[in-house]
Length: 147
Image (cartoon, rainbow, N blue to C red):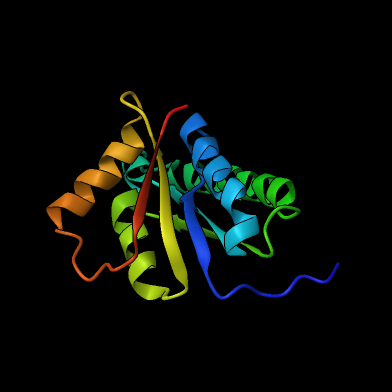
């Protein structure tokens, strides 16, 4: 089967958590209807590198290797379900980076975020969105509660 590039994509934060898998399952159950592709965004908090003067570079390299390995693993797992899987690796604040991606890429149809009361990263993203008042973001955000 020849896959064609989709016009629209789901954006999911790729952090390896159960909430990420909940968000991916949500997207996967809708892909037959929507034909959307998938963008996996992995963000490493760059504040982790600042505190370790001599070893900051090594910590950054290790984090990048782990992040890229996760993205490769997820791509291999989900490419059979989506017409196209793209990956993005960035360093910084996850909320800020997600908002930048949403502003930059007009082809993102939905930002799908898995949440539960104990998962801090989703809370950080929602807090960032709230503080910035969703400035210049027109993409719908779908909140998927833990199942």
